[in-house]
Length: 392
Image (cartoon, rainbow, N blue to C red; front, top):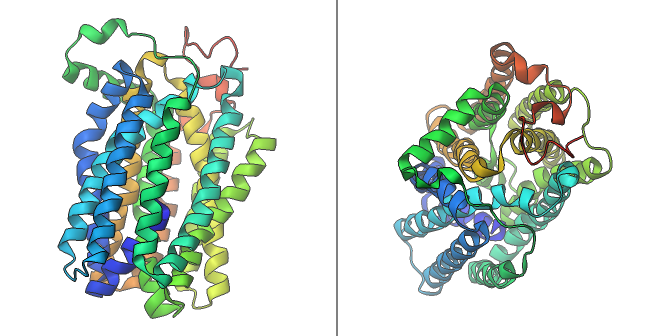
């Protein structure tokens, strides 16, 4: 899908020449996530997440088919692209909570931290290759990028029924109303300072510091490297994240996890500032790689803390709240970046966002002492959890 994301970003900017139009892409993706993520999490607690992921993947394939039709019919209006992005965002609002809640059912509890690291490694390999391939594919023709995304979605859907692992145990609270079950998930997150602090830190740090949505502007107008260069810029954070994820599979963070998470988010902010002011392509790639590495450490710790702190019966709903926060930081952050760039200029918007990330770190360290002082992952496992016996 990252091949497709690069193609869509370049095409929207090519059609409009507007940073605000790139921001609208993020807003359109966020709208269905805001409306559907929490109900989707409730569904993931009542039904097999594999089925929900399969359905969502087929809808993603449909969106890729529409994008392919868009370029083959030589459309020049940007509005059909927004409509397809809305459809794609709807599919992701269902698949994200389900996929995040699925991992603890696929591996034994003792292996969960390493499984999270391995899952991140595999994902980041795709994230490294995807944008680079997307930039090259778009340079050859956008139909190649969208056609490849369509085939990838269909292959992913075909492989979903092959996943094994244990199944979701029926929840005794399933007789409660769906609205009450959704509220229960929100209340759980609010009542756990470690969980709430971790996911809200990610929300505001990336909301302010995310520069990905503005990369087409940097590629075309600031660094002058074209769509292939855009692919490399998109791949640089993933390269840093992928190498870091591989390192974490060998040496997981075992002590001072709270302080390590805050340090990683601060490094993300510094890397964003450096990228914002850079006019050298090599330095820009290095700065983005640093942001990717720092973000990977933060994501790894946040994911592990949330998984360890959540009972099986609530994984879907808690994953939905986490997904909503993450989506707000990414897609809504893209909209914020586009609006700020339109008002202040692209470079000031990115630099200001990086400085804002550093400010968030300072505030959150004071606002969430339980998160700052967490030492080991297993310290947050609730009594009676299925992870209790083997978490150490």
